[in-house]
Length: 436
Image (cartoon, rainbow, N blue to C red; front, side, top):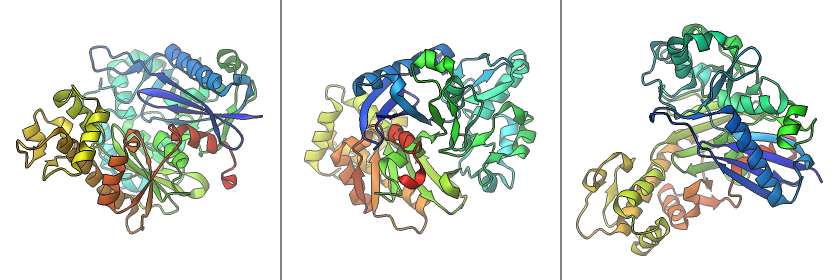
């Protein structure tokens, strides 16, 4: 039997799924991404460690599936965005992988602000959010200004998913999905937007060509076979952003209208054939001239972790959720969005009194996230009627939270059975899209 490998390059973990020809999951692997943080402002992953993690994850998933890596016939991925590495003319790393949480560039450079202020920026790129100092392009300008010798030696800028393709196939190509969040892509054309490069004064030739999702990027080479055990000649396919692939794997557009993910951030994804750039929504090219729409907010599960860590350490989170289940409501208590940004309960909550228990606080935090989710759904779908939502992320494990979301949004929530839907989405796109 031929097997498919789906890789999910997350920020905290890399996940690996082994699927058979019918997309049944036979094995999962998960490895922790340990980063170099310097004095707290860095988030780096050495190339050697990256390769070691990929090797370890493939081994774990294959062992659980009871197969050898050389039985894998197709590979694809889901990936974080705005993480990158600089290579010299020989393809040797000049830097570690610089991950998106890295804050070495503590200001947004004027060139980036100028790009975002261009009248045609939103309509061209599909990016409806404000710029951040953590953008890849902002950190490229940091290298240009602060490490000119490194920058002068740079022949290629590869995103983390580009680098994955490179170490497997030797090809310097990449996907449109993760690239769409760089601020450099013409979303409708699916090509680099040269005006953006001119404004930033960065050579577009540093970046490889973009290929559409599900296109064949290349084949596993002999070097990768020796490193990972995957057979030389194995087909490697172009993936996309982790949120996109998780939505596909969760059933968005098939068994559900859209998908939502409640994790560190709260995110919603849908697929559409209409290109309608607007504020608070990021649009990316998808298959067959369609588009993927993403909107997100910081009011996710982090507030529950904050409450647990600072005010209820004596109880496991599962027990706190049971308390919320028993109370059945917040008793008038209201949590402010992103409560974790506050130092005290009095600052983070409204209508607080001495009768409120842990259960009420947890319920209020769940309601706050659900209200934000309702806003995201409205931003994402405009006039489209939404009946069923595929729920992913850590928040989907809580039946109570799903019930709270259903009540506030007036939608049915479909719990996804696969615990790593982004790896399933990656496996799915290796098959002809029309076969799905």
